[in-house]
Image (tube, rainbow, N blue to C red; front, side):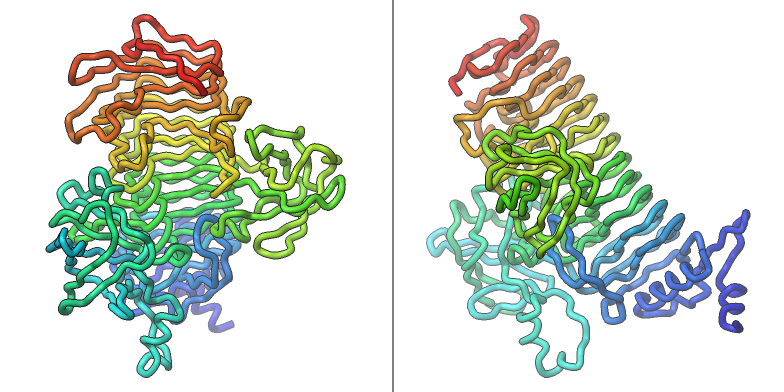
Length: 627
């Protein structure tokens, strides 16, 4: 009783109407080297007394994993595993974490915030960073075309062993560290062999122009330490990286997405406001099976003066099987190793037909193992593996029985005999999100700006975008990531797009609408509907502006396209606009200011119908192409 009395008198400030605030200044947090156990205790106290706010005095705080609680997390599009966290926001409701402008510095493999089974939670006024990054960055100081080698200067922790270069992650102290630490660091994947890689240009602070020329293999890169901090790399490349460029690697595939900054699962009514993520060893924020999430000034940005090229080693934000509305506004996403955002569902594949009502279904990509596809009462439909078309009316899940992280049995309310084959997909149509993306900046990242795959209404307006690949990708597939959600009401307007698609990864389009069919030359049916792209300013050095496949109801109007001389075109002969297997499309009111004064090119395949191209449009040279 005495302890509870002290807790109530010392730690609670009244903010009116009985709201209770736990002020971490009363925990003497500013004098702690490792604040993880302090924060964990404060959260327990908050739940015990029903506090509404956890308040930090402004400062810089270091979080270590040594005394962090852990839980096993199956995180879609990331690496599953036993995860430690400093903020276990599990079953919290009507709660605010207010950093007061503080810097949170994390150490080692951790997920800073795990938010599960919670509602009406707000995280605000803080930044997230790591002392030691989940990547290696090496400045190219020499290259030798004859020997096919180049030398890099590395300032972050590394190891050269067995003829290979390894990223060294920060590892917590343990009783074994003094004698066996180095050996365990390899076994526990704290030393990651340089694998997935890309080269950055410090002048533009973005991936090198025509990045594909400088791709290295993901395995077998030979390394020799010439002296401390100077390493010679020998490998096969189309072209050696130029002097002054920076080699970036996040390590081995399926081992380099361990530590997103924010993990959200089975929660609703969340707000992230005035949050900066300077680095994370995976995504900035990953949300699944949740609803109504708002990001307002949620920035994934480099820390000023850090000297780093890269922020997050995967997407800035990612939303899978989310419903309600996803709102992203007033945010900046820069220098990620993947997309700014991806909003989608996920197909599972049919592994076996058990009976007329029951299927065994499986996840496909390793990063989707264990994700929660559906629960009793969800509406789903079977999807044809060849054409991605629905094969059934909406069905209701009567039972879901998980076997393991890959296989589940699902039972429907109606028979599916004769309507499904092995390797068909099943889509959860209950869990798709509407979205509003406005007043954001995306720049200097590998990959795309926005991936949007949802049949709910989406508005994307007043954004400024410049990414290495497509600015917009609208797709679905049953062959790799199994990401689902045909678009059925997407408005893209009043955006400024500047010199995107400079990576050289094939003739990608700025607007890339490309459902992934098994047979690229033999498909039918409409995948998406009602896509409007209007009143955008598109500044581009290259040729491919839009590829639209299998859309019923496409409008591309009043867009201003301006050819720049920022870079030499990589695919100069690609048709500007390509229409494939579409119907009810309108192209009108667009202007195209080409450097040579010529008109734009547009092609329509012979499966498309009801395609209207205005005579006053600058894309006049209509060509018919065979499918």
